[in-house]
Image 1 (cartoon, one colour):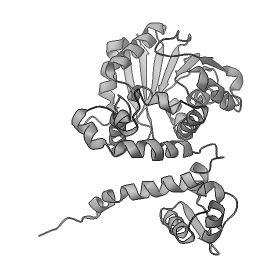
Image 2 (cartoon, rainbow, N blue to C red):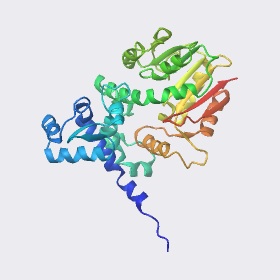
Image 3 (cartoon, helix red, strand yellow):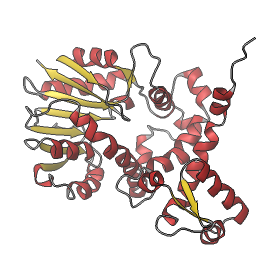
Image 4 (cartoon, helix red, strand yellow):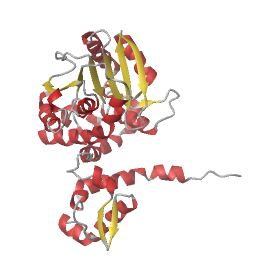
Length: 337
């Protein structure tokens, strides 16, 4: 009898241990501490005021996970950790990891109830009476931490999204819910004829200014405050939605897509950045995990290209194309007839 290898199941069983190890190391500031100065585990423990033996176990675990390396008995960041886990890095995703630790990790503990009832778990987990987004931005510090985490993911994926289609025919791109403006910045730096508009809530736009000002295309990028559900949309022949549609139920999506399509001129388009499920629903794993995450923390989900095509066609778009980028997010271009 050929008995299957249990390794894949054991690997899944232990997966939460690896993620929690990463979360704790980020939360303690280990990767910032080791950014420029290699230290022994005893030196790390002394600076963090943590137990020496426990700290050594954590550092060795991070080494086994490929996050730290050692030389002469001292620990320092691996190249990947120095790029994505050092707070001062332009590509840092620390904010998203801190959110994963303090919010998502708790919400996922109530996944069974979400499956039974089909509803988010923020009230059950935290006692919050309203949508989770209100709590992300409840203080300037929380808003910055979360937004910077999304920025780190964005700067790694936005260049691929804006190159997925030929955008040379468009003159003005308005990114709705643009956060730090990474998608607009990537588009304007890639397509020299393009002018960009960063459109988001007023409390977010000050953070966007920091990144727009650093871009060589800054003279072609405008920042405008507004709400894409209720406010007047800026004039543009290309709109963009990056990781927006997966947050919302279909009745809200229909409202937003109709608003965009009605505002666009003939031949204008909407560029969408989202994870795309395959049509047979088998992959990618990350999209399925994200869809479960949307179940417990928002009112949205991940979709296949055909599902987005149906929503976009209903809203009035005549042509919908999809491209897999091979990165964290895929791209859709919907053109108005």
